[in-house]
Length: 477
Picture 1 (cartoon, rainbow, N blue to C red):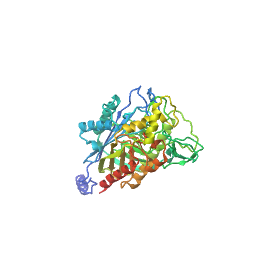
Picture 2 (tube, one colour):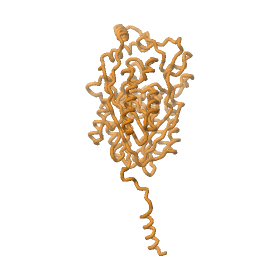
Picture 3 (tube, helix red, strand yellow):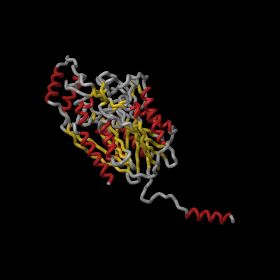
Picture 4 (cartoon, helix red, strand yellow):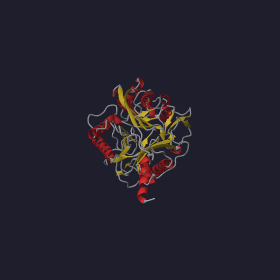
């Protein structure tokens, strides 16, 4: 056979052969990722502990806004994970406004959260129930930098594939609330009896943990069609790790995980850069200290590195087994839910006024003076607050967004009842209004349930779960 004839046959064969073409109703899926530096300047107070915040004196690792823009061809969704303990709703609303003005992406298509690192400067109001009249310098800065990060992620938008997975890592999550033996004397700041204690140490009075844990790491992975990693968004229900250097600014294990997963995926020095992020799951009652055993002493940042490496290794082990999708659809719902604000009982108010009236009085109960001030703050706050709830669908994955430090029971219920699987919850999303225990945990007392630590009505978690599941049901139709 002559060469021209052979070429003609090959051409006919190629033209008539079946082609794995993309369905005309499915548009290319695209992802863009970027980070923006949100590190505060030295000298401001590091929050997350009782007493006067110590000043930041050293930057151990930069704090960042880790930004993802997803586009299914019909609409875009923005997800931002900020290396910060708290960012008020109003600050995030301003960041969203700036993004909308710059890109046209609607504000209700943006999920922005904080990680709750205890080594940052807060971007939250002193009383999140009563927003200030003007932003602080840092609040202005962080809103602008978040907007910049999203704009850069949009600039990096490119065709992509997406995959999702889960893996259990039980060894780093423990319920930090313990029921104590019946004869243990335990009181809240108002002199009322508690049954549960946060961070009780390795005490002989320990009875049992007061609730469950969620050991699952859920994650979304993004890569180019030819397999170059673009980004990875993970979620783990671990409060934070801590053990940083004194007066250090640090993004805690959240950023250490991002660095380690980038290393394991051989995704260093890519253009555009790979972006890893660990969002905070439902960890309001969870840390990584097993109080049934004596606590092991560690060097600064040692435990952060250990936890980050274990999380990254667990995710990397599943990464090789992922099923990649060239095209997925996106959906998102947002709802404002009005919740009642907790007020002091007559007895608590009388106690608070008595404590504050005597500046020389020493605390007779845990953090008595601090919570006397919080009781007055709650009294002077509005009677209700509107919070933003979001439900996000990425392919088969369901993501809940809640602006509280959420108890693990709530996250586990949402996972069990969500029509999309896998599913997970990002806490401290679109604001931060304190702790969110279940009604059953309220009955046990303990730090997370104290008036001022918990700011909203006792039935709030039930209303939030119902609202989120309604939004997911709407998307399932």
